[in-house]
Image (cartoon, rainbow, N blue to C red):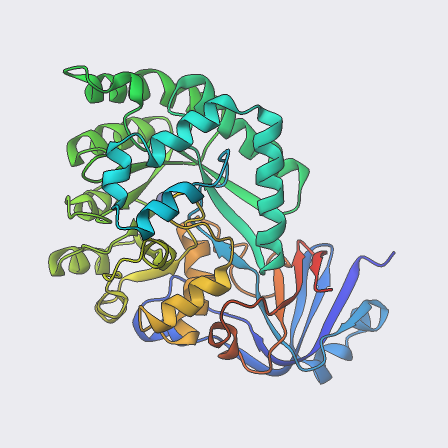
Amino acid sequence: MSNSLLIAGASQLLTLRGRGPRRGNSLSQLGIVEDGAVLVRDGLIAAVGPTAKVEKLAAARRAEKVDVAGRVILPGFVDSHTHLVHAASRAEEYELKIQGASYEEIARKGGGILNSAKKLRAATGQQLKQRARAALEVFAAHGTTTIEAKSGYGLDVASELKILSLHKELGAEQPIEIVSTFLGAHVVPLEFRGKPKGADEYVKLLTDWLIPEVGSNGLAEYCDVFCDRGAFSRAQSKQVLGAGLKHKLMPRLHAEQLTRTGATQLAVELDAASCDHLEQVNNGDIRALAKSRTVATLLPGCDFHLGLKQYAPARKLIEAGAIVALATDYNPGTSPTMSMLMILSLACTQLRMTPAEAIAAATSNAAYSLGRHGRIGSLEVGKQADIAVFEVEDYREIPYYFGVNTCWLTIKRGQVIYVAA
Ligand SMILES: [Zn+2]
């Protein structure tokens, strides 16, 4: 078996070359090579350029060849916000929402995240793993090669540790790269509610017990908090993220989704890797993000699934100079999709991002938000060969088609992990 692979004959090869992160106008620069090819060796990119040139290389002549026959090649998608491990869908709540119940009303009645926590605690590790593995195959089938995954449906010591251990096991057992995030501060669990200082007691459990345990066992790279009405306050979020930092867990934050809490300012203050959702940001928040290294990760799948009208102000964020990324927010309550393609379609029609901006946000900037831009998110010599090929002639057709899967081939570290039937 040859360890070299020549993927040639692309109508367009999107390299996304250049130093990240991409702000403003640079977000739409895709580094396109017409009639492009990429040569892969030992899981890394050995050459990128016009097919006629790459084909002539001695190593290319010995390589196994894939002719993509005029399709489009791009870096595999980096999905920088998912809640991968959960026990079941919440289709029953979906129906209630369609009939008029709000997300918060359902949450107050023990639905929402608490409903998922109840189901997760009752599930075995094997059941959870099987469900996650099936989802990972769907991610790969839509061109995604790396995902971030959050805990947060356990909400007790044993269950949270179980989820984080599953991230590790899944990362070792299947090809999609998994970046683990601890989200013990998703909501206050049922057993702490109704007590006078229940929320603070739970925060103390996280900061004094769970976070040190997660940090010392290397179970996560990031610590996240859902800072919103009905979840955690800005002060509580700061306590949790501060404890995370002490144990080398870099902060990320669910910010300004349902209400504006000032979480964005907190994210910037803590130099967080990413600040996600942002539907309710104000102009001051946008200016703060623009001046910072904190990525503004937009999750339009949530607004779409919940039928909300207010999407994040992507244009303002881009024009101000913030680092904008896109992710699925794959989760059973508000965004049940593994398809970055659907997210790109929503980014174009609802966030008014151009197809080029949306693609860069879902590859290069998303990789930056996970601290992996030196290795993934672009097709450049020396980077990891994480590649997706789409059944289109022009990259703009990737978001243009919606509700259909145009992914034709997915490659992770030089190995084919998905081929369209
Ligand atoms: Zn989320």
